[in-house]
Length: 458
Ligand code: ARG
Image 1: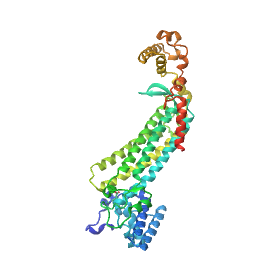
Image 2: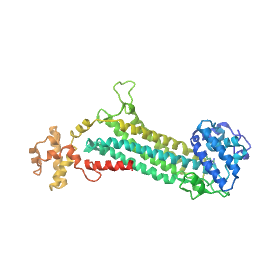
Image 3: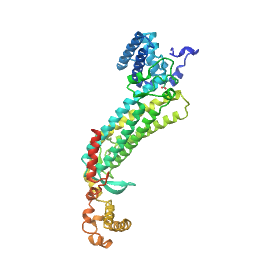
Image 4: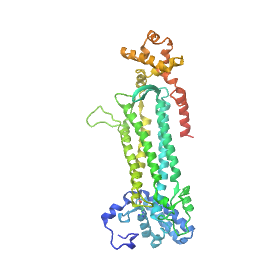
């Protein structure tokens, strides 16, 4: 098989070695970006009179034919041509003859591959941002219906203070909002053109980098040719933002799984997102949530793989960098799939309000309220804490909750207690009164919901 770079070689290639070195098996995903990049490059070569108008037009027509063929699945890729760039160039030459060989004037595969990756990641990042919005929307829709549904709030997985279920769900809305922001910010660095950096040092041809950047919709160009072809920090940023996003999804999954358990029974997953057991007929497993939690690991892995690949590389391009692709493709697919499934799970899950509401009246999560009650009446908070602690102990010993203790028992603990404590101790009151900014008080939650809606529908 002839190589496009075969001139300097005396021995022909070995197939098994070619197979190890080739990236065509996975970088064929970049076919459209590669053709798009080439179209911009040849348009610029023409405008700058580096090749003739006729030659450029032939190349443009040839590239368009290849694009159509790609759309119809008619491009045959060869391992001998190593990667998508050489495969396309070879097919162009087969298609239009030796003039196709002029396409690569003033360009290298090094700036070419970097350009393709920037184009790819720009599109995919935007799509992932849209999927984040869709999940946020699903969260808001659920939250809206559960402002006054109460759920135990935990610290150390011990009942702490009751909260509005909407408030709990909205916590994830805001995490996702920061994930959205990180991806949006990363676009500034993705939206820069490496094209025209050449192999590493620029080129002797009078090219116009601003022009190709503009044709490809990039906002600017890399300032330094060595940097343009050798860094992959824009992918690392994407993988890091994706890892954080997956970490958030994974924590959410963990809660959905707990809440679906017999022990909690706070929600039930829709059948679509659950599976049964091959042996235990009663089972309904929250598989999709578990799988998203599990897939978080591979996204972290992709981030670490690329960081490690790059850490010892001297400038500029090294073949090691071909390893940047599979982890990125895998992450794109994993994140998109996870977000889509997640939105479905949230939209369709049924919330067992009675179970949640019942849970909050069967614990001591209103104890802080009682301490605050005394503190408002002038008892130093430390003393109030001690008094309520003793009341909790009394209740535990009697096998009851704070609302079950008598007025006499309260009076004995402190003369500041009055009849209104029975109202104060109601879980709904407990939640409603936490009206500090960002708190779980119903008014605050309503405000947060309004704000969330203006974010998704500006
Ligand atoms: N397949 C290569 C990659 O993915 C393209 C760039 C190759 N450049 C080179 N000089 N070998 O990184």
